[in-house]
Length: 199
Image (cartoon, rainbow, N blue to C red; front, side, top):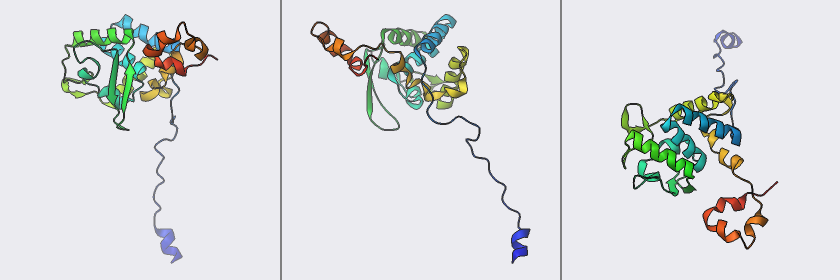
C-alpha cells in the first residue's frame, strides 16, 4: 500500500494568480497628479481621453460603469448636463453626480469631434460604434495616463480614479458654510462641500 502511494506522481503545485502582484485597493491620485494628467492630455489634444478622465474623476464610477456610459447619460440634448444619474452595474443603485465646467467642456468637445449621437456608447471600442470599450482597455488607458506623469502604473490602475475626487476637492470648514452670509449660497449648489471639514 505504501509503495503504491509513493509511486503515484504528485500534482504539480499551482502558483497563486496574485503572487508577486499588488492586490487590494489602489491609492487615489493626489491633486497635483490629477492636474498633471489633465494638462498632458490637453497639450497632446487627446479629446476622448480627456473627457474619459474628467468623467471618471467627477463621477467616481467604477471602470465598468465609465466604459458603459451612453451619450444620453451625460448629454441627452447634445450638450453635457450639470448633473447626471447613472445606474451602477455592480450594485444596481443609481448614482447622481455633478459635472464640473471643465468636464462639460471636455465632453462637449469630444462629442463634437467624434460625431456621437444619442443611443451610442460615449466611449466606443476599436472600429465599432456599437460596442463599448472593454474594462481591460480602460485599465490600460489609466495605466498609460499614470505612467506619463512618472508614477508607478502597476500601483494605480482601473478603479484608482474612484477615490481621487475627494483628495483634490477644496476643503472648507462646516462653520464657514453654515454661516448666514454664505451658507444658503452653497447649500443648493455644492452639497458635497458639507462633507469636507478643514484639518
